[in-house]
Image (cartoon, rainbow over all chains, first blue to last red; front, side, top):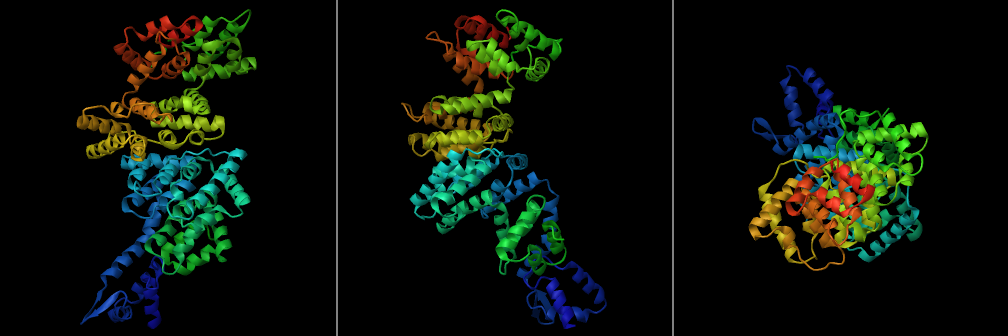
Length: 319
Length: 314
């Protein structure tokens, strides 16, 4: 009986995991038919969801909300998955802009999609919301230091080919180093630097890869290290998304699977799994293994439950 | 509306290609024949002729034209024969090479095209130059001029008619503040001009005029600004508010008695002949003492003049 209770409690995600274990719940329903005393035993053994109130155990409101979110995880995943990628990105961006959530999602969409995918998302945004993406970003972020960078990133229509102007790449690596030095680690200063914004928001990805390579050669450190040290979160994310998206996404996944991950970090799991499943998910799995010494699918299997877990595993490409 | 005329019964592209070859042969070129064909074909037909010519004679039609023709006529014909989006990409690229003098061409291309056309131009730019227009514009400018040009060139404006009047009023206030302070802090102004839809901007400028009894272009600080930022801004505003009036003025300036500016004439007429030259012509006539055709007739000569007149539908 205690085992059954524990199993059902776990199914209701009383153990901090993601999603709910639908099959376990259904089997409990079947097993305990015409045995209400089993159900009361369950209620009494689950103080997180139920509180004793005289003859009746009542539900905790906060936990009910939590349950609703956990039940909805699978639904949200499937709906996001079914959408056209352009509408998906447009809705993700809009949701962030109008809810004052981290601007990180905007950077992610702007930097990890191809030029035509981003343009498609901008087109979808106009059809859905009757404004351009850049005008909404410009308006919502107008008081933030990262405003010009963000507007530049979402407006970009980058050249996608391999041709790189080596001289320009080298000169810009120098310029980036100079800008980092001039900002002197003062938070918010580097992200407003005109040259930094220009380089990151107009150059092609191939050009930027070369520029970052030169940066390491000239300054002896990777640019991501300098940005992390100076507490430039938005810039750090931008550079990571542009130069090493698989690494970036594997870090996002890890943050969502960690103990004590917050609501946004957990939502990110669905977002990354759905949006990258067809794209670079194999690279993301490899990057995850390299950085965290474990398989992404094992971490998911340990933390998630039920249909949500199975869906994530399928999207992530687990065999 | 376009001004070029295409015959009802258009010869096949093979016939046209053969006729062009005939015009090239012998002593000198039969320019009249070249104009009679190419000035009366739309972009799709011109492309077919180019492909057919290359297949039939194993040489590029563009290169042949460049060697057979000369001067302003040759330059105009070169631009004319290109695909419309490639054409503007080529013009934009030429402008980025001396951007401090030619930035207004970038502004025109960014503001006078529809959002979809601007994307097509940028795509063509990628293919031809193996880099983006934005990179070239940004790398060669600084300060406010860079911020403005980059914003104008990168934007993908909402194309619809939805307007938020409350927003128009509040942004008219912001614009007024920026304009009053001179040319220092124009970040908000550039944000508005560079991202809002054309319908929204027109509404904002109307609110500005109602509130301050003067148009925004008149309210901009006067006096020389060596960076070119103010001039670029004024050009952008004019193009957005009334493109036809803007180009009519450009043509009037180019056909003034004090010397004709053939490069400008070529640019405006070749780009707009198959777009909206009729409306620009009408706007021209409103403010000038003659029709556009009469001005071209008077200020240009030779085959160049014949070509322009043909493009204008004469």
